[in-house]
Length: 343
Image 1 (cartoon, helix red, strand yellow):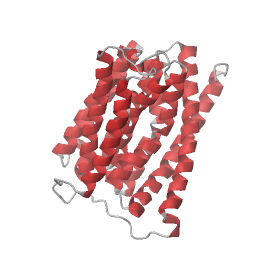
Image 2 (cartoon, helix red, strand yellow):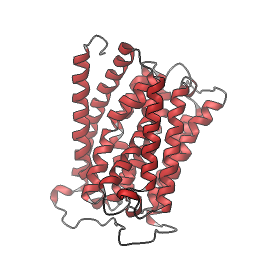
Image 3 (tube, helix red, strand yellow):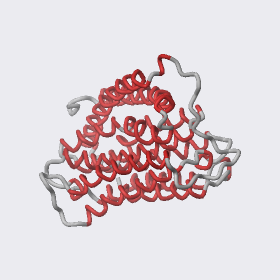
């Protein structure tokens, strides 16, 4: 669609889309926090499911529209690159929370469980890639399995919150998910959800614009789809996660901040299912290259470090940032340097 646009026009469209994504993401954080209070579902569950899925909507549009255009690598790397970028955002949020290590203060079993679920779902694309190519109506069985696992995981997360089989040790730095008492007529769950849905539509439109700009840049500059997907479209469409995470930390909704990132990452694995549905030339897992698998490995490595950080719960690392956060930033920027060096 944007193939004939000038570089200036592409840049302006990209900036406008990024602005919409930033604004909508910021508004959605406050709405999600109030929805968590009104429904009684809690910050970790709402952050991991509703906020995580909603802020990923623009990225969903990018991957699906790219797959429809036959750009398997761009569709794949957009989703996986977004997971890596968003996990790095959580490390940045840890820097802002000066009182204690964010993973220590936001102790919540639901977040630990979702982290394990994310690792499980990230392992499926590797298995699909290594297995013989087989599709049903041009869709790989792994794509269907990922949807099933995600659905079961959401139900299990809700059950864990209602009936936890173990609880984290409380310390003076631990922040609990306590509903606010000053709810008013405008805070009715139905009203909040309608506002949330409107913002999702805006995110979807912005995501489509980002996809078209990314495709045009790939063709115009001769860049690899892995580079554009992992470092451009993935980062731009991940801006809601950055905004919502920082806003949630500033509001003191720490479980919402951590749950939003982990839940968003878990939902982002479904980008691959959506990409497989949109890619009509066979299995999307067998149409990607080593650069895409590289970012898949990076996402798995960062998720494993985050999971260990949630379990270890270091109170305070050097310079008021947890050691797992330092490790996450080192892994991510190291991966960016490697990707940039190979193009």
